[in-house]
Amino acid sequence: MPIFAKNTLMTDLNYLEYLENFLTENRKSKFLKVLGNRTNHFTVAIEDVFQMHNTSAVMRSCEVFGIQQLNVVEEKYGKKIDKEIAMGAQKWVDINRFDTISGCVSDLKSKGYRIIATTPHENDCLLEDFDISTPAALFFGTERNGLSEEVLKEADGFLKIPMVGFTESLNISVSAAIIIQNLMSRLRGSEIDWQLTEDEILEKRLDWARNSIKDIKRIEARYFGEN
Image 1: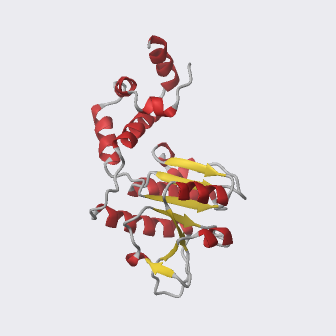
Image 2: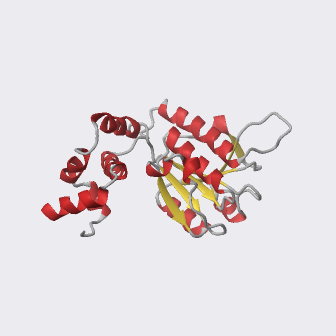
């Protein structure tokens, strides 16, 4: 099978139409409904999370609440996503993997994201006061030591969840779920242009169609062989 660039596939409407013929109408309608609530305005980054089920749980929160991009830094603990905990979320969320935190931060800044460290800090901001008007990358740290000094130095802002009990911290997956749900709810209720572009939606329709078809390699070989 010939290799095609991702951008070529993304804009190949004939190819998309061909693949969607293998999907039910309900499936195609579900894709459009879900994509209407997806965003790249916010993205999430997790740094060297030791317990893999936490990474998978954060991925699931991204999928459930509408964040399309999850960035995973695996500088210390290189492990595979726990598919059982993610419950299929890895099919619908884009996972960007990085070997170093510097590479992740540099990539996100180049895309116009503010680097937001989710940790108590002298210049921190409470969740309800966080400015959602500009794109932000929300960084979550390890269970053991929190975010690294490198992230804290590169951060453009600091965000924390207000707490009134004796416990001073929450599990990373719980913190991520609370923050993502809050910010996405506020974003959808705002007048900010937060939704995916037409090209991004077409790209995801193609990716999701491919992920939904079991015998995709044979079907692609037949399509490209005839075209």
